[in-house]
Image 1 (cartoon, one colour):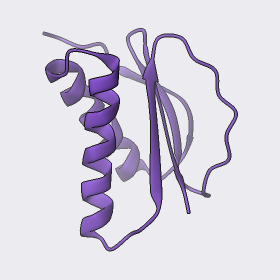
Image 2 (cartoon, helix red, strand yellow):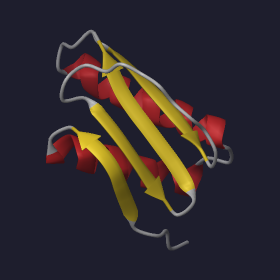
Image 3 (cartoon, one colour):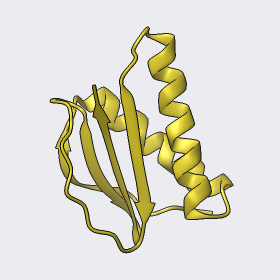
Image 4 (spheres, helix red, strand yellow):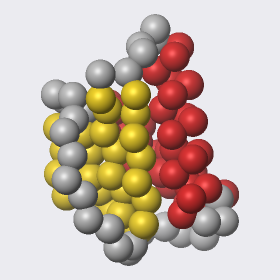
Length: 94
């Protein structure tokens, strides 16, 4: 299945992390059957990455076609993007 390109709507994150999240989201879209499963997959992958670098911050993931948000995030750790009609909102709190 060929997925559409990701479109970043807002980012406060370095390009390597943006690439990680987009690539991981693409993998999840190809393998996970539901938005809940996609969010869980993405959360587990970022937690594994954070744990391997000794981080202890909490990551939060929202996936869906329709949602609103109002949040506070740690500086340099926020990303909002779409793949097709599916939105992804990822942020970290200390």
